[in-house]
Length: 347
Image (tube, rainbow, N blue to C red; front, side, top):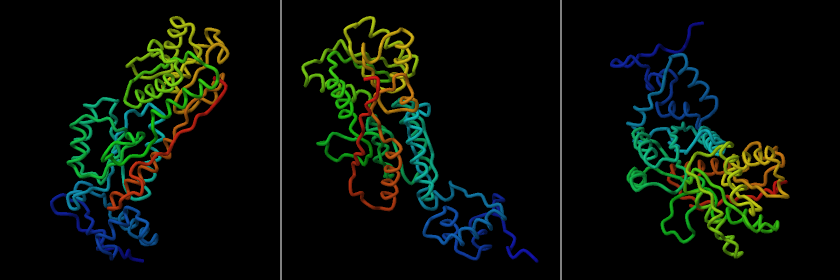
């Protein structure tokens, strides 16, 4: 039986099969082809299958630059995260990407390495692709980055952080209050009878410093705050550095009876160092972390920590952004998904 699909006429200038070629061969409009190839839910599944079959047969490859130029927006969403080596951001990215892909959007990702200048440059580059929307981690950006976001008029949702409750004209964001989480974990340690609680932090990004502020507030309320119990190091977080910090604190501040590490990987490294040094946890010193990363429930002893809803944040932020891109106003522009204190054996 002869093939009913007519041959495609490639674009004369480029030799490429065009969207119009696919539309002509499938017997539908170019806009229907576009929506079908994006997998939009409003398009009949049978029609999506037929259009994709014709597209595959003709060898059609979408031209995102041409599509963006025609619509003033692409089918891409730009996402900026600090690191890919941290499970926290991998979980967040994976959840956001799944939600966006289900709605027909692809993602353009940039990794900022906690560097404000690198974040600014990445944003400039990503905006050249005319993204339909933007997801960006945190609220702490330099002036140029904030201006770029505002002037671009691209719908934007911030991840992992929330503004102060009295902040006027706060941006769209999904996350939890880092200061509240830091204070809550400190109060948990106080409730366990700990009185000399050190705070060990690295990287020193804005969210870590908010946890530090929460620790300070809780200890000040209890009349137990001592500035000498702050251990701050700008180096990247790692298990090895957690072990080093643990040894330093125990040697230089032997009266410390609990250590709040700003990240679980530091706390995991501290637990390994305690085993190596023969320091009993929690009877001699309690150890707590933050984010409930993979492996924390398998440590010896298991690690007390703050469980953060990063996958839920990624999904909720993507859904909020999808609404903004449709011109809808979210019911809650600042969505607080909270946190959970996970009490395990280390405290």
